[in-house]
Length: 415
Image (cartoon, rainbow, N blue to C red):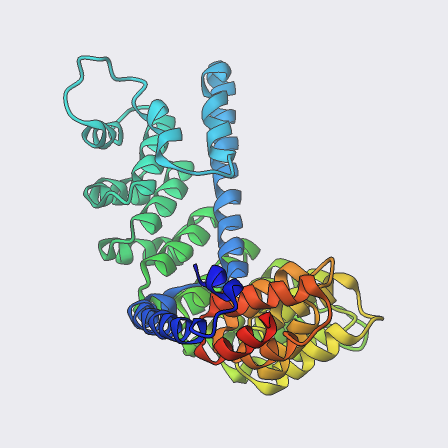
């Protein structure tokens, strides 16, 4: 409707548009206020992906364990489908329910949830695991107590599954048992999964216990603990995470023998620092981004993390990295993506300049919408461009942002 009014060219359009922009502005303000607390809890895509990768690795371990058990009992054909479900990228309760309820006949009483709770007591390990995975995806709080028993007393694949499920359910009743498994457990998947579960529950009191796991002798546990600290976001974790990066750094051409030199550990620590967002991390992350001896994925992680830190030094380094054509293309792209997360007026101008770029134009346009009012000034200037396509895209972004300052420039651009 707004676009149609613009196209009429009638002088009365200005008043109508002004009124509508005021409504949009008021609506946006209300929405932002109601979402403010939610936004604080959101995590960046990078760390969410890294945590999901930990789940995927654990599910693969569970699937492979079930496969070995099936091979020993010569029931290989019965578990193939279940193993595929565990290794699937898409996870929901429906893929596990058939396996969890396969031992029940049609006469079994109770609804689906009640049957799944009964399945937790099955003699078959694969059935217990399927039930836990389903109940975890369902966030079923009634399952917490029986799953806690499995976490502390069952065989290792079931314990690993229990840690995942308890994290998904998010009930604080699981905290003490998860801490104990993370500290004293023998299996790296159970320990690492317990750290991630504590982070998903959001228990800030577990931070000192998770920090202790940064010294664990298994790489999976160290990297999981780092990601868990990033998800919780407590600043007391900043110095221990920086220490990981310092002690794992190459010195005089010789790579450190420390477990902290491992790529996965370093990447996890970097993403965690970015998620916490402390400016105390800026210098170490800039050093890693610009260090050509660091692994490529470690440097790209550093670029991403710097985009989450509200520090002018971080923004300037990202700009320089993106502008340097001699830098690896993957790192330059990571720097551009990181810049798109900042709320910097000069960055907004740079993004406007990249709107028509074939490779990164779509990222630039989305980032400008996300920037909101910070991008309005550079976008208004861009309405003066001679390129019709760019001018149209600029107008649409301004309408999407809904800032009243754009009303007159949009009308002038139309005229």
